[in-house]
Amino acid sequence: MGGMLVAPGYGVTHFLSSARPGAGNAVLYGHDDIEGSVFANLWQLQPGDLITVVISGVGQTYTVTDRRVVLPTAVEILAPTPDVRLTLFTCWPNNVDTRRLVITAAQVPNLLSS
Image (tube, rainbow, N blue to C red; front, side, top):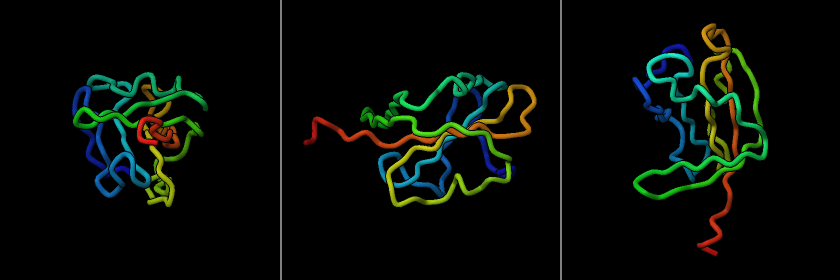
C-alpha cells in the first residue's frame, strides 16, 4: 500500500481499483494524524456502528462488521468482493504509523426503496 496517493487535508481518497460505494468492496482511506486528520477518530468505530457515505447528495449506510490492525503489506483488504461492503483504513498507531487500522462495514439495505 506504500505507493498509494492520499488526498491532502480533510480529503478522503477512494482507491480507484475498488468499487464505487454501493457496489462490491469500496475502499476509502485518509490521514489519521497529519494534513487535516480526516480519519483521526476512525479508531473509535466498533462493530454495530453505522457509517453513511454521501456522494452527489445520495447517502448509503453501512454497519461496521470488523475492526482490525494489519501490516501495510496486507493488500488483501483492497481486493474485490462479491458482497457490497465499505473498507476504510488509515495509519496506526497515531504518530507511529507502522500498521494500518482497517474498518470493514456491510451495506444496510435502503428501506425506502423496498
